Length: 301
Image (cartoon, rainbow, N blue to C red; front, top):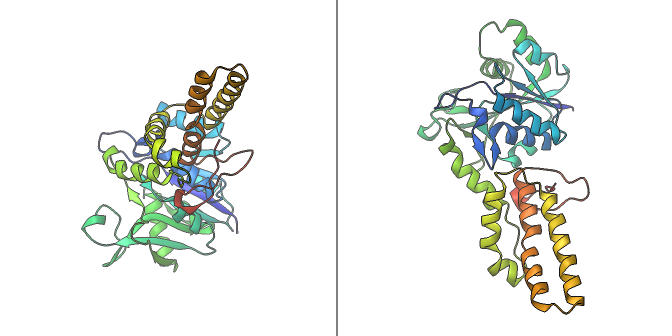
C-alpha cells in the first residue's frame, strides 16, 4: 500500500520560535523528521505550517537539494488534496523526534495504527488517549479519514482531530517499546540526549587496533564539529583519496615522513564521512554502507 507523510510544523517552542526548527545533529528537527519519513518510503511528504519563516524555508531548500520533495501546506483541506484516498499516511506530530527504526517498522504496516506511551509523569506533555495511555505523536491514518476530517475541521487542531477520529473508527493501539519511544521536544535541551544517542549510534564496529584505540577521539571530535557545517560526506572521501594518492607519490620519491603523515591524516576521513552520512540519513547514489545505526543499512552522501 502507498504511504504518504503528514508532519506538523506550527507549534512554538519555549522560546517563541517553531519547535520544528530546534537544532538536532547539526540540522533542524523538521529535516530529521522528513528524512526519516523518506527512509520509511513515504511520498509525498507534506508539512502543515501556518507561516514559513526564513529558517524554515532554508531547511526546506536543503531537503529539496537532497532530492526530497517537501510540500508545505497551510491547512487541512490543502493537505488532503496531496494524498490519495486509498493510501496510508504517516502522521508525525509537531516537535516529535521518533527513532528511525520505529518509523521504518510502521512503513510495513497495512492498517491504521496509533502508537502510544504510558500515561505517567514522564509522558505528561503527550496528549492523553485514555486512563492508561497517551498518544506518542506518531500514527498511521487512512487517507479517507484525512479527507473527511479536513472537510469538517473548522478551527480544530488537525493532528489531534485526526487522532480522535481514527480512534473512533477503530484504529489499532500499539504501545511503543521502552527505549524506542518518540520524544516530544519543546526546547533544545530536550533534544540533547536524543542527539547524543544518534551520535553514539553512528559509531561503526571497531575491527582493528587503530580504529579501536587511536582514531575514536579524532573521529568523534571531527564528526561533532562537521555535522554543524555544510560539509558533505563525499567531500571527505575525495579528500581522503587525494591524500592517499599524495602519500603514494611521496613514497615513490623517497619522502618517507611526509608520506606517513599524509596517510595518518587520511585515516579517519572515511569513518567521519560515514558517520556524517548516517547522522544526516543521506542515501548514497553509488553504494550502500551498512551502519550500526539502529542496526539498519544507511548510506552516505
